Amino acid sequence: MDVSQWPGQWAAAGQLLLRSPVLRWLNPVVRVELTRADGQIVSWDMTQGLARPAKGDAAASVRAIELLPEQVLRRQLVLPRLGRADLARAVALEVAAISPFPPERTASAFAAAPGADDTMIVDVALTSTQEIEKRLQAASASPDAPAEQATPEVWVLPAHTGSCHAAEDTGQAFEPLIFHGYGGAERRRATAQGLGVRGALLVLALLLLAALAITPAAQARLRAIDAQHAFDQLNAQAAPQLAQREQMIKQTERLQAVAKIAEEQLAPLPVLDMLTQALPDGSWLSTLRMEGAKVTINGIADDAAALVRRLGSQPGVVGVRSPSPATRVGRTDKESFTLELTLDPAIFGVLRAGAAS
Image (cartoon, rainbow, N blue to C red; front, side, top):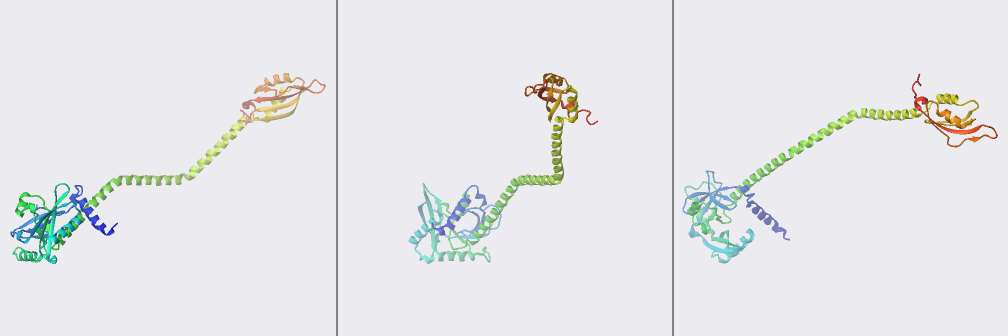
């Protein structure tokens, strides 16, 4: 991997992107004032190395001169499609092979156009640096030349365009052959400045679009955050009341549980009073146990079955049952019994009506 090739590759990729239809509008237009071979001055608009007849009255930022036809040697090459760097090296080799001038005095320029199939037609122009200096001196001596101006570019029109008059008449874009080493800095500077301004405008437009897209979501998020903060503040303010409410609910639940238990709890005195009145003479109780609404009694009576019927007829007695049969006590006529009574809490309960009074 040759890292040294990366800058050129990135530059070539950038140029390829700028030639695409989507980003072509980013390429700035540089106005070039060209002094033609016949001495007339015309203006061209340069974009991506292509020249078109100028439109409008904008001032030119770059000067160029056209070499006379007799000052230039022309050669046309047919090469496979190559990158710009490879094409420049191939043209340099060809120029070195065919130039009649010493290498240090040889100046060359080229322009490529698509050819048939996978080829390209390369128009090559070469001349001596002395001829270029003569043309520059002649152009600077012209009355229309500015007093102080940077070195102008040196142009040769491609062979297929013919003269400047023909190029102006057709109005078609063409790629001039520009000799390296003469001028060019002003056009590169103007191109870089224009590209920077348009790139900055594009970035600004994208940022504005992103801001427009993000603003509703950001506003909704801010509103949600504010609502959450307000909700948290309300929770903090209501925390004591909520704690009291929670405690009150728990106390209410305890009271309801106690009340439910109390509703089923029998009062001893009414139960004892009912049993005292219901038990016949000659009967007595040895054990009395109350669990909720159920009462269990053990004792001795003359007739346990009659006692069951008598207790079952008492008001508030829901049911009477004998979990075990009565047994006779010794040789007497008495019977030992165990009975279970279910009593109505509304009559015998702790919370019965009229108990408080």
